[in-house]
Length: 320
Image (cartoon, rainbow, N blue to C red; front, top):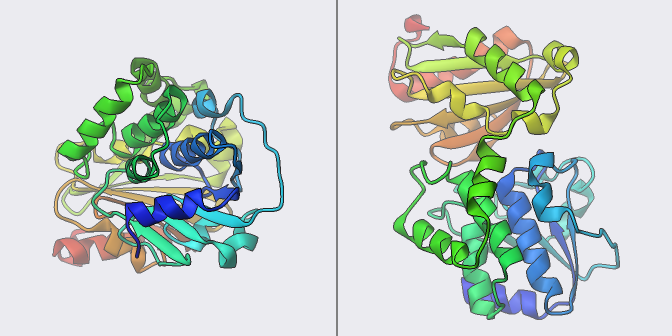
């Protein structure tokens, strides 16, 4: 493990850097990736942001002017990636070459040569902000937009338990750079496609409740993907819907993108560690927000998850 100062020195000492983001990219990995990109290129370095999946349209204000220029990299940096399994199909070839990881997940598998992990930070962008401070790289308005986006998305607009006074202080400094924070919040949390509205309506209508209504479960099947034409980025931020009922303590969203393969997103609003639950299926994340991948039938996946949630909550299985 290294500190902010050593991470800053490592970034400053290399000139040709590939920045790796995780599959199914969210605001934090995109904000961290492009925030670092703009910081490095401001110093005259070569940098490129890579992702296995298409970047969500809602974040195009961060990468609209980005020109993807590939070169021979001498250094690889992973941002907001807890495990090389999250690199995705296109980037998995770099799994054994990652020099530095900047992250905030407690479940990080320590895969890089140098690790900077701050599990108490609300977002990887919060960690990167401190690295750029140590590197004495000026935080421009463009960089500030990236970092604010990552912080506001991963903190749930400052609602999630990982939000601290330090999170608010950093956000305030970024706002002082003149960023359009109201636009960013609307773009991230309120602007939705027709397909997204349809999926939200489906999720609310078809949500199932278990464990004396302490657990909510909703599944988006492969057939529904095909029927509605919904894109993966339209599902970002859907998991918190599962915890909106006042009695719910754990919410589960499962997405079947390929037949028999379910991507699971779990949320907790009280004392259940969903990262520990997801770890049992080869996943991980944070105490209150985590994910994993499970193969099987929907009925099998549902029961396996509910059994683990019941065990973690100390509830008899018969309640399922």
